Length: 270
Image (cartoon, rainbow, N blue to C red; front, side, top):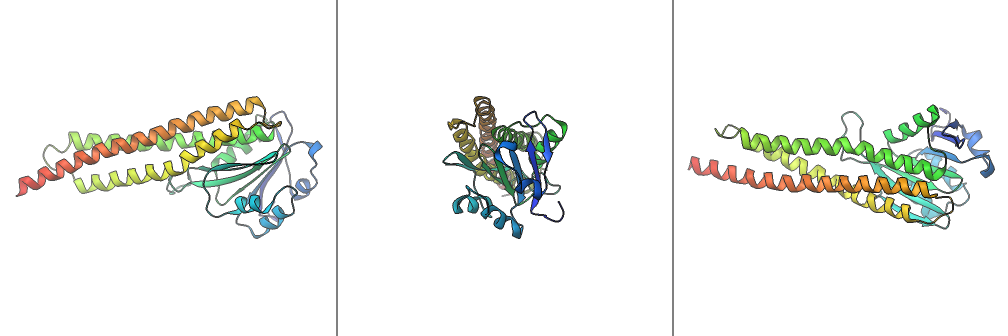
């Protein structure tokens, strides 16, 4: 696919967990009775917009959503199709996890068109599943699987934030008896934790609402088992949101204790 770098990957789902890789000839020659098709595009490539505008059923608002540089998670219904915008944590080496990466997805009964600005590991997970023959079997199932993998990949990041708060609590309680702890360092790390938690929640909370809305839509092609999978993902996202709230609350308690320790040190030096 190097000649057409706007096309990252494309597959025709076989309905049994496998997927046939497609090039542009296969994509453009696909018909609804040939099986569901997933097309994943680079939103930054100059040819992507032209291809999107050539597709039936994609109006200007949908195309703008698929190509927008800044997006927040949402789920919009267009007749018998859905525009779903989601975000995942940035897992690239050296990247900041709160610099979340978006994926924009158009879903109808016969096709999924997704676009991205930067690479998402959850997409690679789905590609590996299709290659192994245990991937999604329909367009709705594909989006449910993708949403689940985005959420599962968030969990270790949130767990690490919680561990970092615990570490600061222990340092402040156990190692400041002799006044040797660098409180400025603790304050810097605490502020950084709170900033990360706030930024993550800003995108993850509306993602919960977007997935919940999709799980409630009554579309012929959005079968009950897919809605069930989406509801499971909504539950996981809800727990992640609650864990982020807990990180913020614990950080506030540590912040109060830090202020007390700073005041005590100042009193001793007066």
